[in-house]
Image (cartoon, rainbow, N blue to C red; front, side, top):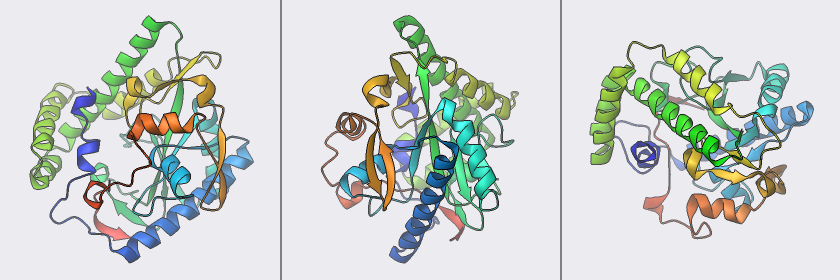
Length: 301
């Protein structure tokens, strides 16, 4: 099912009519991301939990000491047992400044990872079709426990892949008019094909509540609750369950780094982690290969 993911394809296409971010806007966006990271780090400290840099943010910490110069987002990770403590602390300390959007709890929020979004801004992407709370986001991905028994671990993974695909298809059907035009305008044959496929599959789920599907998916992701298991996984991560299942040790033996002047953490065995995600991660990609997000009006920082 990972072959039918559209996320990687979208990072490398352009859509007519989308917002072209200027260098000045990117600088301002990154400044606000730094502010968000400082606030979330403070909330984590007050809650007694650790947030972990993931994906491109971990890469930026290692390679640049902060946000990658052309990057426009921050990816964080927390363990399942830390998530509620972190979100409560953000609400208590910064509730007037941020929206908190959580799968299974926020009505109408139809992604399987958590987002913290800055009020007073508008950074609207393709997932925000019909969403009024579309401020600048920081994504938070949950590190889940998974089973030592290989059969149970495989079945856990199959379920995670199923729910991720089913939720995506149901959402594609709901937003089919917008996403069909989006795919066509992109000029990507793969995106057009996958969009048509997901709409067709999504039709089969059209009688089901998307909120309930997301809640069921989130429950399945957290199905294993064993902090003594030898394996952990990030089912909403870049490479999904089977591409991002790691041994608990050394992954959660965290390494301390500095990220934009703030103390932060990256997974233990950082080099192996980044190599798994990006291959030869020390190479600087050519400009046309650099990942970006597509935004729509209104775009306000």
